[in-house]
Length: 216
Image (tube, rainbow, N blue to C red; front, side):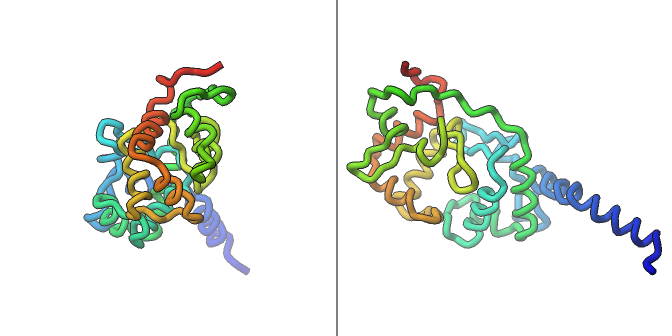
């Protein structure tokens, strides 16, 4: 027979594990990982995880844990390249990457902007964002990234409210091949089909959604 005391201790450890796991994620976010090269995330992504728009650092708060963890692992493997994030991600252990992703996913984020202009879009930028251009095999951004670009699941992150500079950088990374971690390679083709002017305009469209004219 297993002593009751041992059972009680084991039960307490099991119950305490999620809290300890979450605490590890918070510590990594605010202080960094065990490896000194794994710097704290808040230095670039803000104390609330909502990013620093002026510097082009994206919001992480509220993004799906699976998506965040995949991006960290892709930085570690080199399938997604970025001069700052690659060494930071490589300095994290797999367990640390999972923990900080879970912590960030649980952080509160701003509500997705209300982009009610789905019925009629007469200007080229709105048409591209909402309907795409199938003559060039470009689907509408919201057809994958959800209404208003608010994000869908683990493979289609939110676009609305992310810094314009960040969105431009990602589209250019898809075009240039420095980012190629799309499971279906969809974004590679989409980005390569877009012009420089369209990339800038689409990035502004989602970065500043409340400034867009609401269509009837």
